[in-house]
Length: 302
Image (tube, rainbow, N blue to C red):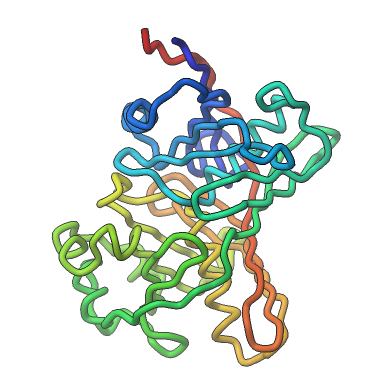
């Protein structure tokens, strides 16, 4: 058995930037154990496995694995998988037409819209499978201890650190400066003590700053899931844009932000995020970006 694979760099317009992703366009015949082993072998933040949809009205059933665990939903894997399948032009023998794909995932249905330039697919944007959900607040001192920061470097004017989700739980904390964001270094022992895998995927730090064409710079750490730091995390930034809209005073709002991530680890990523707020509630969140193809080949499982 020699399944084919394609890798792409996601949330970037240039090779060797953004967040690398491995896609297995035809994962039929692979067991869950084999999928997990392949994801560990690639050792990227995530690897996706494309299966026929349970409902033929949808494009595909997609399973997503980090090197250590399966995820119910993730951002750059969806964007990159949509890009790969659209460029292939078919999925399990069915032609892909139009600019809308729908993936079945553990967290629900994930709709994706494609962007084309001169007929070629260059980007994709997803709608989060679940509405914004706010969870427990986390003490600033706890987040600071996990991230190697001082408690005074955790900003609380807009919101205290808290768990939030649009399909995956993350801890969100604003830091007071770009310098504080750059020096953050997560202690895995403290993370495991206070935020075990069952409670949150990881910690997402951010700060408002205008640089490199972005309005917000972020870093996301998920070492318990085998991702010490992620170059670009669509599934957390799609929550972050929802949080920002939630805490704005307007009852009706369309909010868009250009997010940067991965700059401090040499993998600059640009994410376009937006949220819709109606009657005081965030009703939809989106994140998308450009992709570039990188590698292709086969996996020898014989």
